[in-house]
Image 1 (cartoon, one colour):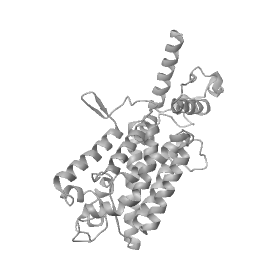
Image 2: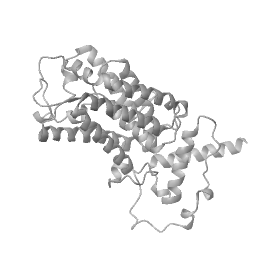
Image 3: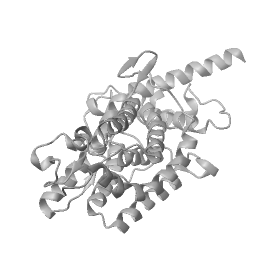
Image 4: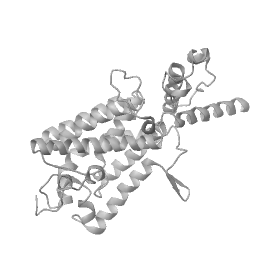
Length: 333
């Protein structure tokens, strides 16, 4: 694999079959401009900007484009971050460069479709992060990055399958799928529900990969789908899809503050009351605010079925903010 401009090779392998995905993602992004919350728990602040997991990942993507422009298409920084098979001119995971398993989504070549990708990731990632919390969302992104990379590396050892992976495209697709799992009926452009848009994008991506006979990307794609679906359920979301199995995860990863059922004190009778008896109820929402209403509905369903202790710190804060807003409206009314 020597003797070629490395970054251009990566771009030629991905650009043509990524565009259908990105074009669909533009539609997603147009809807996603409406957010249903804001993060109160950033990693750090830069001036007045709260740097969340989503903002940090997006910023790394933008920075990688600047680095590409400065060092050139075969520069040392860019080519040492991508995931690539052994016997290449850059080295690989099998040559001991383990960091590539986690760094491959960072290098993004400057391109119009890259800008679209980063925009969509920022919009959807912000919403999913507000739902999960910054730490659980960060772990979720790590899983989307690490598990497919490990699996494709193992396949290289076992079956000799080779290829290259670089850019945020696959991770962005995983975030889109997670969003659609949580809010399948959220209306996107022309009223198309989230599950419809997502299914179309996933199908187009699969057709492009199969058409290119790219076994390396096909394995990563399949592993990403499985990791997203099972992982998101394992974090305690998408309760409307009980047929999808869960993997037990420690509370330090999921952000859950619940205790085991054996050590949990008996619940009061009020914990088993129906949702109509809960004091926090969603107010009538204006047009364009259906996503916020669905989020509150999901949280109230969770409280009604599993109790307040089943909520994460971020979810409790969301309900508290909603309750304060409801009281404020009543006082003004």
